[in-house]
Amino acid sequence: RDGEYADTKTENRTIAATSKYSFSAPGGLSIPLFGKVKFTSTVDIDLAVRYTSSKSETGKLGQNSFVSSDKADMSIVPTISYSFSRQMRGGLSGRWQDTSDATTNRNSHVRQLQIWVEIRF
Image (cartoon, rainbow, N blue to C red; front, side):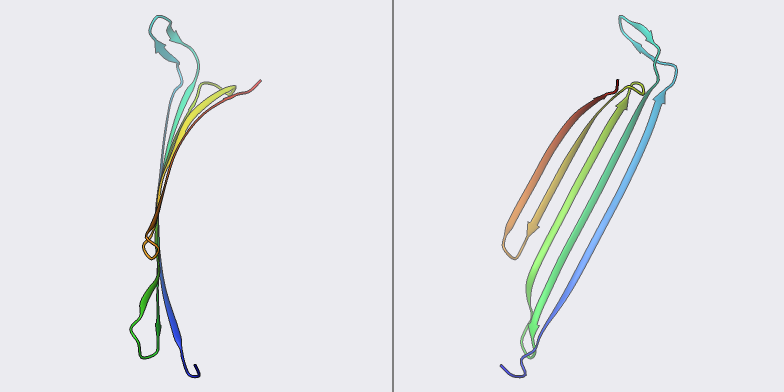
């Protein structure tokens, strides 16, 4: 084994983007049967997208290299929050994530939905 040399080359890539949009109704909202309800409401919409990949190639001196690791991960996370007033907020968020490992031929998927309400006294 003297003089044997292994070389590993790894390439990592990440692409990420986020977006946010917010709007409000300062004069209140018109609700059927109740007329115009006076409260300030605000809606915030967030979206985050991320893709990462990692690939490693290993080779020995005088031999062809082989892929020792090949993984990828993609996630999309949307969030919508609604504020009725300073005392009451609510929202909805989700997660869509796929992970793959080409060297072991394994894939995993995450699907998540969360609904929340915050009431301050």
